[in-house]
Amino acid sequence: MTGEPTAALRDLHDRIDREWFRWLAVTAAAVLVVATVVQFALDPFEVNRDSALFQHAGWYITQGATPYVDFWDLKPPLIYAVTTVLAVLSGGNMAVLHVLGVSAAVGAVWSGVVLVGVLVHRLTDDGFAAVVAGLTMFVVPTVYAFPASGIRPKYFAFSFGAAALLLAVDDRPAASGAAAAASAGFWQLGGGLTLLVVAMGLQRGGWRTAGRTVAGGLIVAAAAVVAPFVAAGLAVPLFVEAVIAPVYGVEGYTLVGRLLAVVVEIGIAGVAFGAVGAYGWFRGLARDRERYWWVALGGLGYAGQIFLEMQGAIELILLFLFLAVGVGVLVAHAPTPDRRWRIVAVVAVLAVAGGYWAAGPVTPLKDELTETQAELDGPKYETLPPVPEGAPSMETIYWEKRQPEMCHYRFGKKQRAFMAQTGGDLTKSECGQWPFEEPPREWLLGGLV
Image (cartoon, rainbow, N blue to C red; front, side):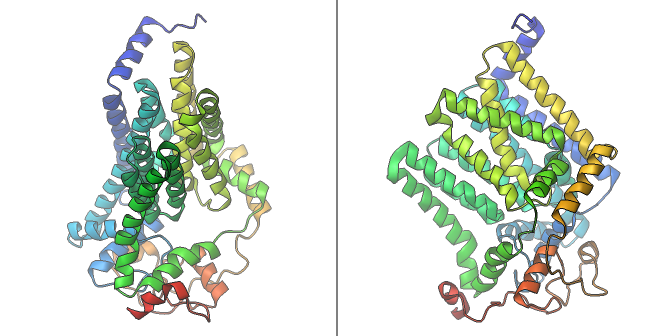
């Protein structure tokens, strides 16, 4: 090897470097649109169980339902602001609502992928590295294949999270804090980004900048999340279901079992992607600690998240964000053009291998890993009440536009475990009551309004 790519590869590299945003935006859109159309054609109008709840709840709210009272859920409320708007636009047609939900999911993922690329460009001033970083998000098939099944708050948490990091790097602290708060408003684990961007503000501009970051976050959190529920007297239902219930709903696992679960979900290619991205974090630290410290810190933090939440590959989307940035840093600082193309080749191979692991036939290795992981972990919850007899599926409730008599109609494992631990009733008509003998002192205002 001479260390120099061919003339054709040099020309392609230079074109991508010059027109990086167009290459990134168009390629990301093409991948997502093709994947969504193919998935939709293979299983028309298939709706994920969680997506059915989010989309149905948006329609249900237009019929007068109260969030966290007429339906139980442990996600923060911003997803329902989105699905309520989509429900209004759909005119009450659930098929149209599903198409709008899929479109919103695709749009959120696309914007997140593009923002990852823009973030890397701001960090490295390298267009080629920006394109590679953004498209590296597609190494894990869940990122591009799952939106066809409906809307998910994690897609929006990813998009706003990437925006928060970009705004912090651009020295726009108030906007960065606001975007991070929005990420947490879609998914609790987005809250880690709020701490990170505050730390970035402190490092980049001192206490004044950190304070502006906090202020931006507090404004969004208060105005878009807390204030509407306090004003409506719904602070306790929100606090019980979106703050307390997730803590009670953490699954049981063994350390080895959880690590195997990660391998089962993202495959060998996903693990290799993690190794390459993490190598990029530490290469960046070695080169310029002041510039790249937060990439490694955020990545390590969200790597630790697997011990809090791991019900599928999509749970790791914020970790994938930091891994993709790590890959971009690795490309930007590769010593020779030939080495840059080698990294691209590795990413391409991992993407193909990841797709095969997710969509290909079950292999003896995958089957054995799945069985071993299940044996090591055993039951995820000590007590799990059965679903009430005759309860309709979430898909039936969605497509038939039902207004269930039971507020627990999703019947997820986490909510059933929470009700078992707090002595709740799965068949009750209204949710959101304080489950303990003593009232929540700091949230009494919600019960008094």
